[in-house]
Amino acid sequence: MKKVICFALLLSLTSLSFAQGSKQVFVSTDIDNFWNAYDKIIAAKDSVSQYAFLRDLYLDKATPGLKGMIEVRHYSEIEFMDRITQHPKFWNSIRPNMLQVKNLYPEIAANIQKLQKAYPDLKPVPIYFSVGAFRAGGTAQEKKVLIGSELSLADKTTIIDELPAWRQPFYKTQNPIKELPLLCTHEYIHTQQKELVQNLLSMCLYEGVAEFVSCKASGEKSNAPAIEFGKANRQIVVDQFVSDLFLMSNNNNWIWGENTNKFKVRDLGYYIGYEICERYYNLSKDKTKAIKELIELDYTDEKQVERIVDLTNLFPKSLEELYSDYERQRPAVTMLAPFENGNQNVKPGLTKITVHFSEPLLKHNTGLDFGPLGQDYCPKIKPFRYFSEDGKSWTFEADLQPNQHYQILISNNFRKENGVRLKPYLIEFKTTE
Image 1 (cartoon, rainbow, N blue to C red):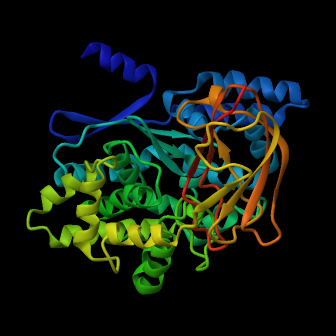
Image 2: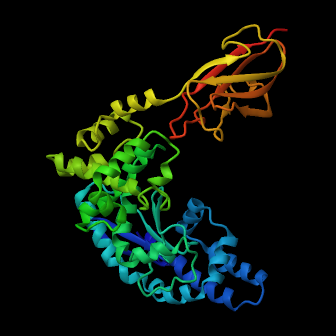
Image 3: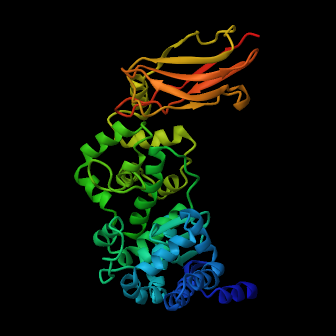
């Protein structure tokens, strides 16, 4: 226990109780270090000194939280320096909030207490407050909650007119410092979830679980504009989501993107996931069990995901039926030239291979990859490649060596105008001596 106390004091940690036998750990050392560095950087007369202060006083003293934020968002020294030196009015206006962050700990801890009551298996993790470069208000990494204070500690008095145009809407539409306890609870839930699978439905569920459970546990209404918009426009949002579900190219329209979708509302996938979770919870007799199932959902278990989603009847058909509908829309390779697939006697040499499709495809999306046997079985592909005028065939040039077994994968990067992707097609053949 003495070692724990000493370690806490060394890192300037503040702990508040959130469960019997547990302490909620907050770390804001990075904020103090940032302002020490900031004052030196602004007073310096040359960039060499500025970068030295940034490294020595801030980056080299980084807590695991700041190190995690830099790793997750790939922040660079140049990016930090640009943000520090270009927005003096912003920094002066937000500084008091940052330096008083400890005043916010009790409300955050109270939310985590409520989460622990709703989910008794909650594992305590530290919450780190650092200062980033405007690309993350809150995120989670492994067993850490990471808060970007330059976003999440702003309020309506924060001056934002120096900031890039793409960043200002966040401050205009949100009241971050008031939303901080719910944000911390949301990110806390992410630290309890199983590893995410990179498909659109799983990403929406992953965020929807965190948003719904944090709201249900805390008794607070979601601050995400997507939830309110989705509730008010459920049918058109769900219809569009179903259309995009298997396209893979439209993820930024739904999750972790800007307002690029047709509705001009960012992160509408949060609503899809939230609605599924809310319906599942309401249908469940055992509410505690439902929350546990949602938080501990195994995204690699397709049957488990399908059971939860299908039970809610949010979509017009089951996931299996929707996938079958999508598969029927997919174009396919119909033939090759100048030889048939599987030919065992292909003549070696520089050869133009033409792939014919069942439907016209977009001419700016192509894709060749290795087959199951790997790179050694793929011929050297020349830069020469082109689509036919009607988009129904594509030709590439391969340097075929004698007495070789070759595989070339025509990938699903090929697609129709509506984004529906080609069924992958493996070309396999052998050359003569």
